[in-house]
Image 1 (cartoon, rainbow, N blue to C red):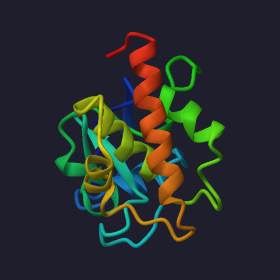
Image 2: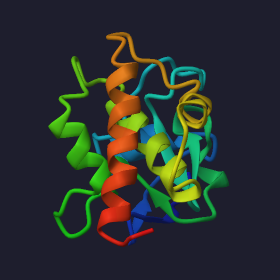
Image 3: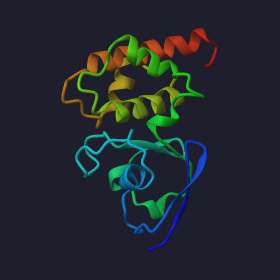
Image 4: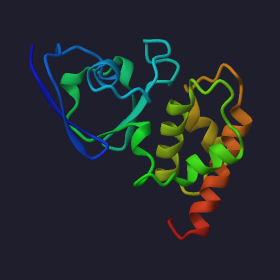
Length: 159
């Protein structure tokens, strides 16, 4: 079995002895011991396993390690030097998660949205977050956190 050299959260990592078709999710969790990305459905339908590949959200449960050719960002990579992102801060302030299981994927999708749209409408948010399922139904708080994070980024001059 081959070894794969990947860049994750800005750091080079090596996944040793991994089959080419092993999903990125299992490489992250089982080989590299990065537990932030969650397994939900295993068929790329729930969004719990969302990570960024070259800045684009993907479902890592169905993306083979052999296809990773760009930087991977996981939920662990959202904070900058230990400082929470605006989105993470609003997530905490608004007490968005209930069980918390889907939240890594929710945060990754929301981060991608705010990078591409600094002033999203409710419809923009609903569209971008479609496919990220929350069994606890915290969608209203997720939407509010995204709006507040967008406002915070504007206030801080990051937009």
